Length: 375
Image (cartoon, rainbow, N blue to C red):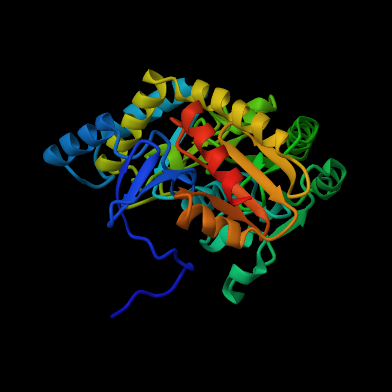
């Protein structure tokens, strides 16, 4: 049996990591400005993270959600304090797609409606409802094309208001910083107007913080830059630094009903240990503040490089898109093969930076020098 081909792969086998660096089986060191697609939040193999997982595994790796799990309670309490959402409840799952899937279900249960408004270029996952809310027909199978979702331009408040006024919308789901969509930013005016319009229409506002959340924007959640309070907040990726974990923060307006939601592996003991270690490190090492500072430096330096090749730089914190005037495939390959730097991409001409939140100014400078080498 062989593996089913999913992604085009670099011919590199990564076998070790530390902080913002990884090494392949030949011993070549790479600067990681990709973070395993925004998953590595506190750095590869952080000693405290490794210690907590090993200690937990030596005690209890798994038991079902049919009994009390004090670790889940600790995660909810700590996350509430770290994010400022202490009055919300928390439902733990395994991935970002599953978090969005359950958020959309909660909105539909709550409103009794089934239509969803989404932003163009959105990416919310690959499970049934999440993929239907994703603006990419290539990954939506016929079985998922159920016409629940209407796609509208990001930041076009009038378009969203017009659809909400029809009275049949269960939820609006928005990434305040679109990741796969090319680091497109929701404006404060749009999000505040959308919050008001959702409230007036009785629709649920969902902020998808799976890629832009957990400190990546320089605040705990990206929507906190915009002074809005969503009804549901989804998170994953950086929540457990590589251990599969996700969750939904649920506002007090929702009434829990036993049996509506459920999960086998969500919130298992190892996932909780990983999530608690991440919250420890974010707090102890002030990684949200570091993200804001190093992100501002990177954005400033990259903006100085704008010209014939770099036509736009956008983002917040350590979630940055560099838009080039030409396709970046060859340059991104050169960054990996010649300069030993991992980056992400969005579309054919946008380089996407999603490094661990512990990236230093010196490492950011190192990346800028290597980028200049390939440009």
